[in-house]
Length: 251
Image (cartoon, rainbow, N blue to C red; front, top):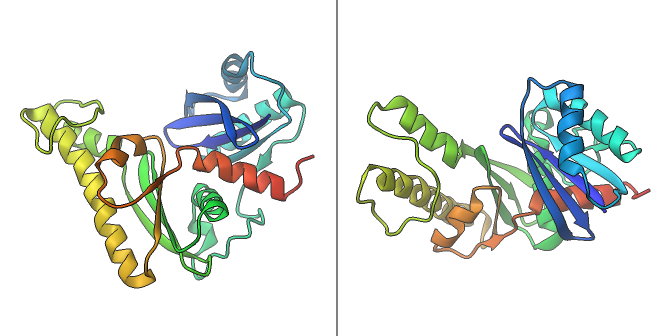
């Protein structure tokens, strides 16, 4: 079993893959104050009882956590952890995009999407931020967008307005809310769905008919509200990490 690890700004997500099948999923808060001893304790407890691991591969957008997490995982698996970074040959041409300013998680998502779907592609990853990554018909990364994520948007509303409460996610019961909390929920979720639909239509004016791929922890809330075809790939980042691990040799 391969351990795939996605270190994000909010969570450290760990997926155990048996082939392409997700055998387990674990999440830990991305606690930046923990040193290697703290991460050793957290990861040992989180991974206790899982099947033997043949290796681990990791992508991170939090440089401060990359070293401690990778170091502990190497000790737990007894093998070096492969870190997907800007020096990794991913096979994805970046066109004119500055690689020094591109999150490698977006590259990993595109690698996975291209392995499964014909371009052009619009890959929406709905996490702390909602990122859009666009791959043209020739398989070249063209850029994208970064939007505030659902939780971030709602937190900004409740933090910045005295009479707006904190809101948890749930599927809206209708298009419009009937109280403050449901209004906020409808606004966030339908707003996100409308943004994806509108952006996709505009992209098709430039790139022609494309495939929309949806992933990320918050995508499950928005997927049912979309009125355009979209492929839901909840494990896209894990699958992209596996793809790159295989390409580099799976010893």
